[in-house]
Length: 125
Length: 164
Image (cartoon, rainbow over all chains, first blue to last red; front, side, top):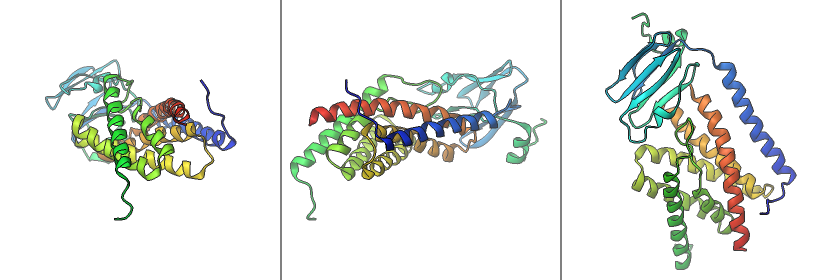
């Protein structure tokens, strides 16, 4: 199988692409930190905040179920046809999210300051 | 309307669209999915890449758009249409631009296409879902795009060589 020769321009742009990917990776690592809450929105509207420190299972809008255990959150039940959200794994760092596209559910890790700025919702419920 | 393509060309484009649709369907049977929705092998882009180099820029672009619309009607929904269109249009545009410079090999063009396809989809996700945790997905899909672009580029190149 013949793999085509790479010209100089190719090497430059391929290196640039890989480097950009690494930069994104660094960006992720730097901006990520252990989060405090799982913020759940359904169809863009705020649904609830669940502290990561408290284990529990929570029904989301009757279509999904969010479980928090040992500081991780994950979707363990969903009635969507593809079930991709349940395969997204466990999240715990700021910015990570589990998304159920068909049910329009987004569960995202946020810390306290973001909560107050974004929604004006009192998190001390 | 004096630039209407010949009947045989129209038939050729139709066949290519159909072929691209079949590839799309086959892809659905193979879950190439890890943590993130939207990860695919991108097999249809073999057809697009071949069309790009064998026929032309505009034709490849239109074939891709029509393919996306038809696949979304048949197997998807409005949301998937939006994502696919965003990814497909950005991807094909980037590939056309790179190809026009004449300085990059087909595999590189395909890699750029793969990456920009995912970028387009992430942008739509960022707008629709208003999440800021997008960087995490961007990272994974960025490298997934590189790998699938590479794979499709090699396969597409093999096809193009055999077509002569």
